[in-house]
Length: 503
Image 1 (cartoon, rainbow, N blue to C red):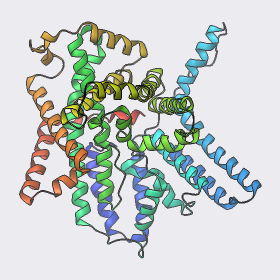
Image 2 (image 1 turned 90 degrees about the horizontal axis):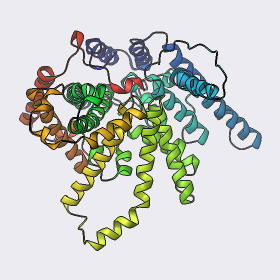
Image 3 (image 1 turned 180 degrees about the horizontal axis):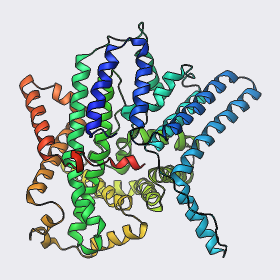
């Protein structure tokens, strides 16, 4: 069930209305049932997988808390239980997401050794959101092992934490210390706030509207050009390829950020605050800053559970760079079972390491040429360079193979004809003049909103709420009209699937 589908537009109001009408003690159970119904909208069978992951991590956390931390024997038992929980959950993830990838690697090795691999390929359908809820559950048991959170004894509450439907299939990847406490309040009369908050509901609706705008007006419209160019990239010149690469960066951001924003809005209507997953990343002035602001829930998860346990930056420079490369390689593979995703992750690590190594050279050049780094012109140059570097790396993310990505980039720089910008050929790439104009208008609105966030740390709902009532109504009316009139709809008037559903 997608956020932009008619089914969700019926499901969500019913779920919210029932949630606020029923007694508080039943709300956790109701949200759990609603979450499983939401997930089974894709495949009822795979609800068993999320239930299995939930049961395993729930029992592992209880066992670790029971053993305590003092005696050496108990510490060993805790480590064994943690290892069992991690391995069992990763085994499920690897089987359903990486089976074919590993199968092909083993087959290639056997072929190189002259051995015929007789194992047949089996049909495996990737469960929606498995990477997200698996990492969320693993983060929980690791936190229990570290003692940063206590094991949750209420199974319904913990199962809701793993399967909470607004952020279930595409994040943000919530932390137990942030979400479990909020879930505990919704059914406790002594801890709970007032059952209905008009302020939170209106803010939630504003976030949902902004998410719809990002997805249906910008992301899905940009996808029309991006898909046409990337599918037959060998037929286009450098200008078309460069435009598609830049617009894919916009498409990916709007597609993924829109899901996170809608998730935040839906959760806020239910009285739950989810973490901000994107913090105007394209206003970053370096790749390392971009990764602190892009997919924050995954970046912080990898930092806390992969990078720091490897040693982080409290080690030699060589080891720090190794830790960086491993972390970003994991990030790449997390996105997909293919070498081009791994290459994309490795490129991010190379960017960050190169930036660190070249920092002394950069400072010397700044001093030699007396560059004023505090000026808006210099900062704009940094933002532009960072965006272009990241957009270039995303060619590996979007292309089907590493070979395709390399050929795409070579052709983009080797056949760049600046005059094609003026002969209107760009209006034959999937978007005519009118559609292109709507896209640029949408991107302009996006830039204004993100610029406000970068400067004031204010999300869209806060920006709108800070205006007078007439301006608030005007903004809402304009966005609603743009979503209805200029939204890109598919068959049955449903918007296209979110990109990150495949991860």
